[in-house]
Image (cartoon, rainbow, N blue to C red; front, side):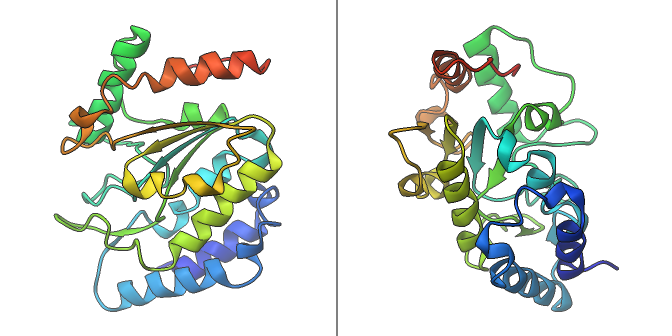
Length: 232
């Protein structure tokens, strides 16, 4: 069975990691320590999501030099079988995760687009939308959301966000929920746009996620910077 440590080594040895390898957390053991902590969780009998080979999928699919937008959530879906390494994305049979249903509701209201038939958001990632969570893993199971927020991922995702802010010219950061908004200080808002709102989960979507129009606002700003709109 692959471990998170071996999955990290495979990622760093692959061409998909080329643009991310210079982020210091990949060379100073920060990511390795978080992976070791997750492997310890699994050794203690906890089931962890996503699978090891998917926990860095967001970085693998969206190179640093291609990032145009960042959607930042809290942590992967804890429901068994839901998490796939891309924040909010879901590949599987109906029903869709409730947070994703609410994202599609807001997309419909914002852009007058019908909901897609499935939950795979990899097309967004391929357009430069970094689908990142503040923690890259979670224990599977009911009431396990947030279970790995203190496992060392904070330093990793801080470094990723800071690298995007420092190296990219014009990026829209969509910060969904309190853990995501806690990263706001890492973003240079003189160069980038921040759109902050409550998390799209059923517990908070009606407190300001609905009606926030993140998709049209992101595209309007990107176009003012001479960049093409994202096909949401």
